[in-house]
View 1: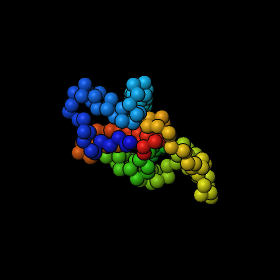
View 2 (view 1 turned 90 degrees about the vertical axis):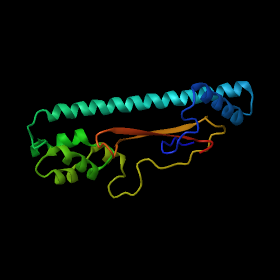
View 3 (view 1 turned 60 degrees about the vertical axis):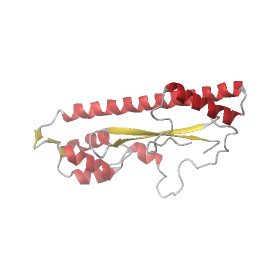
View 4 (view 1 turned 45 degrees about the vertical axis):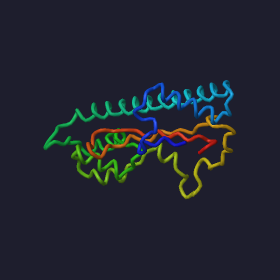
Length: 190
């Protein structure tokens, strides 16, 4: 099961009661029909939803904290022609505050919209993130630090759910709005 925002949910626009009926039907189908199995399936579904909500809330708080730090940092500098004038000797601090999963090119494209700094492109290309470097393979070694291993599928639906939060991504139409994607894959049903 993959949560996909691009496809409209078959339950979109329905009442909560109707969604619960649909969930119960699916629980009966997956569990074999015994009441205790249905309740267990629904409890697992509820726990997964709560875990995803908590993870998303944590990611939003972390993003808000970083945005606040960046805003505080940028208030130290002058603004000319709608861009913050950041001296080159503050490049490392600026890049550490703005770096995220998006990579160097995306970081440069974001920064050039609101920052004017001599050598911004070169500084973005030279920037090295200690966390990213530690997560990548060792120098001269094509093996990852942690080998990939197969995990046996779970015996029943919702016994094991793999989740991830991706983002923040910029919304293309506004450019300033950011959003996250949450993925969840059931180990049994994929």
